[in-house]
Image (cartoon, rainbow, N blue to C red):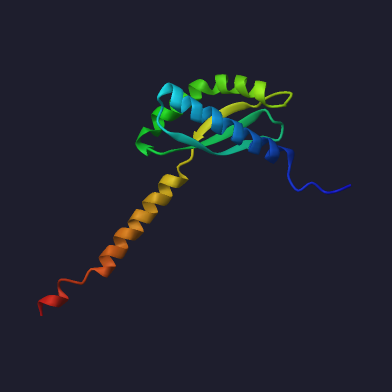
Length: 127
């Protein structure tokens, strides 16, 4: 019997991510929400819960977006039950993925440090 390279939870998570990306995109457009995207979905082994990691294009409006997504979670789950071939669709928990925000902050700090290092010292030119 051939070995399985992927766990079932990984396959279900990937399919959920694809389907939720479409649903979230439609919700952003229809409800006038801040632009967000689904970055990852983690499913528990028993397939009862799915943690949906979301990133926002406007980090300052992420709280507003997360609140709206949490309110729409039941509606998303109902739609997933129609489109996916699962006996039971996991309950959805939305969490904000701040790794992109942290990466941008680190990059801007490195750029600022690079600008300071490239600028000539004013003290040494006053000799």
